[in-house]
Length: 195
Image (cartoon, rainbow, N blue to C red; front, side, top):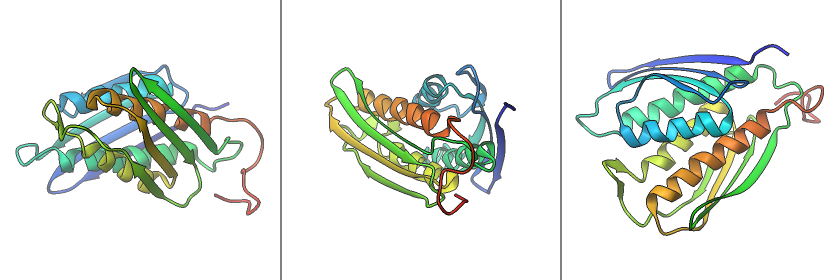
C-alpha cells in the first residue's frame, strides 16, 4: 500500500502554519512546532498514539494569546489529514474508545463522514494548564473536525486534573483517528459510494 500523506499550509495576518502528516508513520513529531510548550506536548501525544508522523511549523501572534495559533494549527492539520485519506477507499470509517489517564476517563468517537461536527462535553477544573488556556483543547478539535470533514464526539466521563484530562483527550482522539483511518476492506464504506 502506498504511504498516505497530506500537506497543508495556512497564511493569515495572524498566523503562518504548515502541517504534514503521514498516516502510516512511526509516531514522530518534527518541525519548529508552535513554541507553545503544552500544545507541542499534546501534538507529540497525537503523533505517538496515532502512529502518525507529523511535521508542524506554526508561527502566530502569541503576544495576543495562543488562540489563533492553536485554532489555525487545527485547521491546517485537519486539512492535511483529509488529503492523506485520499478517496477514503477501504477505511474503517468509525472508531470509539474510552481512554483512561490516571483518574481521568475520556470517551472519544469519530466517523470519517464528510459531515463535519464536534460534539464536545469536557469540563476542566482549571482555566489554565500552565500558560495554556484549557478552552483551547476544544478550539483545536473543533477546527480539526471541520477541516478534516469528520464527526467527532469527545466527552469527559471522570477526571479532576486538567493536565490528565487534556492528555486523555489527545491520546484518545489519536487512537480513534488511527483506527478509523485504518484500511480494513475495499471500496468506500458508505452505501452512497462516496464520503
